[in-house]
Length: 264
Image 1: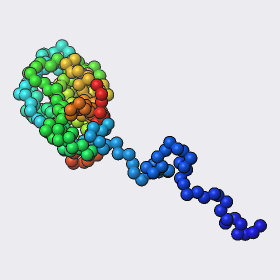
Image 2: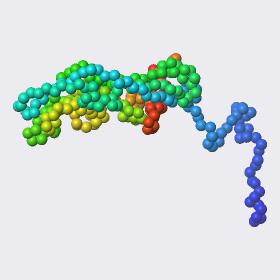
Image 3: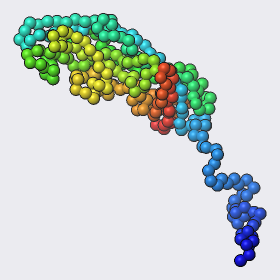
Image 4: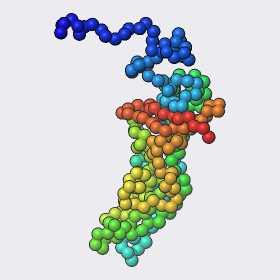
């Protein structure tokens, strides 16, 4: 075999593209892409896109009522009745550092090129407020023998958990912005106390029962609210609901929310 024979092309070369045999295709304006394209589809670019990425920041309020909490207790099952009285929000019993009554989500800008929507949202500024349930009136809190922590003849008590405030500190994760509850009791020396517990711990542990005044559905983190579509806005006939949030910063309060357009 001639060693040069393999280099001779055997294919028939034509000058027309493969669409030459199709009369219903406009060849002059036809554009074909074979393989991977360098240009990705931009689902975020149109006047009312299916999805919007919004840059936001957090702000808070810390406004608490002047209330007193009281509870009756005994040092022994058949002993004398005592009454403890404590101010709830003055910081003498519970540190109020990081406690808030409200967290707001403020609009900064859109990652998308949607001028009309961006202009409308800038007029709103605050697009969502999360209010935390507070103890708004002075109240006597019923407490009960703490069977779980009974030690011999020591008589310990504990109440149910009641609404207290929300938690916030700079750089906090959205999943940690949640309600806190308070409860009262007496310890091993019958010393009365007030303690707080996060909603997550109250739900997932048996440290304390949650009182009937607290609606379980209201015990949610800010991340829960965003992912459950509670952050909503409307521009003209277009409605958007939140579906996801991302915040990876350590000290900044800026984060991103992803919204989806809905038809309802």
